[in-house]
Image (tube, rainbow, N blue to C red):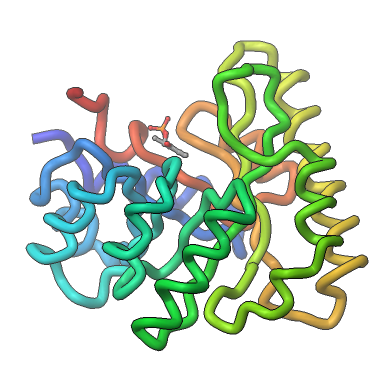
Length: 223
Ligand SMILES: *Cc1c(COP(=O)(O)O)cnc(C)c1O
């Protein structure tokens, strides 16, 4: 078996205080997740609703599940009863659906707004202007079953470290803008979810509070 325990500790040791690890377990088997769980890891991220539902039922109830992938609105109702955080909210339509489904089960679901800063055109997420628009529109203020806890983004998948750093810097600056304008007195708006296996050391230099690491801990995914 892949040395999950050793790799988990290696990842944890490399993180500065105040940066949380979301262990990205998509496509990895339940015994890999349990190996990390036994070492104390409690926050895991998945990106497919059915795979997540299967794992959630089979694994300990005190795991905090984060949904990290692109979420279709018709899937929200399945995860609303138990999801801890939905990291990749990229439209008002999705936010409305989370509000609706969370209200039905009387929960408050934490969410992050996903930014599109990377140059790749295939990636999801709100452009900075679209994110400004969503927030200035103000409908989210009426939503009592979602709590916007911060921002999430993925940097371009490139070797150029200066470009990656520049993208994280843009995200961190944008966080400050949004925090000051809309959430200055809301301590829950504090999360900056950026950094994956290949780029998290750069992300933590640019004020990430939450890194999403899969491959480094669990090995290559078999699709
Ligand atoms: C798969 C995934 C990750 C983890 O990527 P690794 O390179 O395996 O660390 C992080 N964030 C998102 C949104 C992902 O889909």
